[in-house]
Length: 239
Image (tube, rainbow, N blue to C red; front, side, top):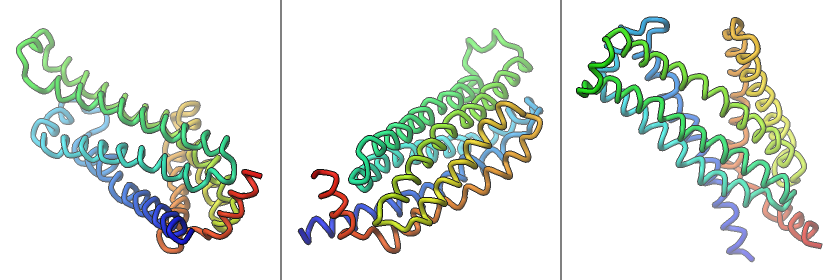
């Protein structure tokens, strides 16, 4: 029993550490690299920047890859932690996070298309430089729009996760409420950008409020879970 308790505490702290790691790591590819290389509305300059900083662009792809590989591990760890509350809802949370992860992986194709267009391959002579640059910007914009799609799946995940945490009894209820609030921020940002794109700046500000979700990994990393309460939930669920 003691070994199982230590294992659960370790799983909680690993999950918390991994979430915080992705929260620190992801902005490199999602914010820093685009801010350096992409000039909105200027296809030629953007293409020139990427060709001049090919290594940085590829590093952004690697960064994204590391994040979605970690997300697969997190999906399993969070399911293990919260399944005593509700196996059904834990599966909903797991599948929505996994769906987000798959979309993140597929979305990298847009960046690989950019590399292909700027590779200088012989068959690309069928396109004029202006056409190539326009296509580059098209795929970069597509990558940004797909992020709004996976944001919807992540919003659903956080909503269900927040409910599970709130009902768990072995993680503070306030943490669950903060996760639900963060989910509403993600959903508002994604749906808002789809419906009212001219107010993108306002919805981006709303999206920034989702930072409150970090209360969850911080709690897991520092405090872990109340294993005794979790075991009670497991007994009640299996009764």
